[in-house]
Image 1 (tube, rainbow, N blue to C red):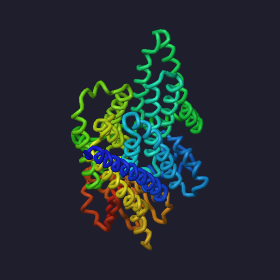
Image 2: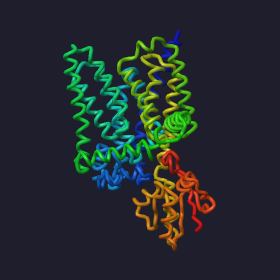
Image 3: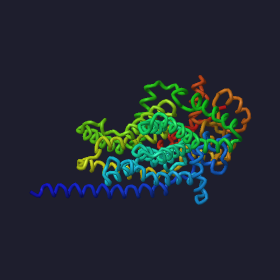
Length: 499
């Protein structure tokens, strides 16, 4: 007789546990981000952003094109109170990610209860890789934070017939691109919103509406683009920068499908298995990955018991799916897959999609799923904290710098991107970026009285040119740091050139 009431009390107790754990997780994660903001730029791109706070100059790559002006403005504002520019940028990330809790909650609330919406927010905010990028002086985390506001504005605009809501979506989209231009594929959501509004107008009215909204969207984008053009000496100079950057991105150093020689399926598997699954979802921790995969399997099984999914998908739902797919394709073909940070929007969107499939509008969610959610949030929060606590451990490039600074003799080290960090730190020894063996042979003639060092990247570059460089060098030292924080230069091998 008392089984039903007892069952209800048990379920209610589990809900309370999930709610409490989620709130604790959010507080814990937000605090950790502000405490462990990175103090020193660890890569070429991070140096670009950090230098921009003191002198914004695209020609000097402070930062590199297209400038990310809204991200830099936030960093400049915080730099008034936080003297360290790298920390100022990382704190700006943390602040925006904190504010993103609201749109995450409101989007989740459209298909989940209040308690489960908080759980969904905690699940997405506690992801290890999201937190790793949040504490770095890079624009990805800020862009993802604004992306959630953009998606929330789209959701509101799809629900209500209001031209103002469309304008708000256009404006937030301009903020998004002013932080991260590579998020342009998310513009398909705005296009679908324009299409959706057709049913509310006659043909003539719709044409007028479309022209007005497209002009307004273009004006919003021109605010930041025009500002950059003025700051760089005019439209002609800005276009020259844009063309140079585009040529390099898609032909030389960009690592895109156009410029890289990796076969398609090799590129696809690296993007999905390494960047999205292992790094983006699992945060390069096996236990985190297994916990999340188990949760997703249960959500899929639970969702398969339901029918008529397609009839339950709203216009915003289809826009959400379209944006996810569009950006996934963009990340595959137009982004550098050696840098997993380019997939940052996808893991959170995937998790929200799985929650929609598994517990959409269900009043009585399986206790097993609830406990799994509690476990995953706890595991992610724990690993996020332990990972962030190591954020300021010396990067491999700083270990290299320390090692060379201890040498009390003339020396020069030839590098690839490491030289940007060395320049930023004004190291006391000679260093140069080098790409070709012939240039290297000509250059070392000026350093007869110096010991000559090369990094692994330089050695591999010479080998790709057909040079038997291994016969002319000896390995001196190896430096290692976290591949999560330093995806490309977490292992640096130093060699000495035998004259």
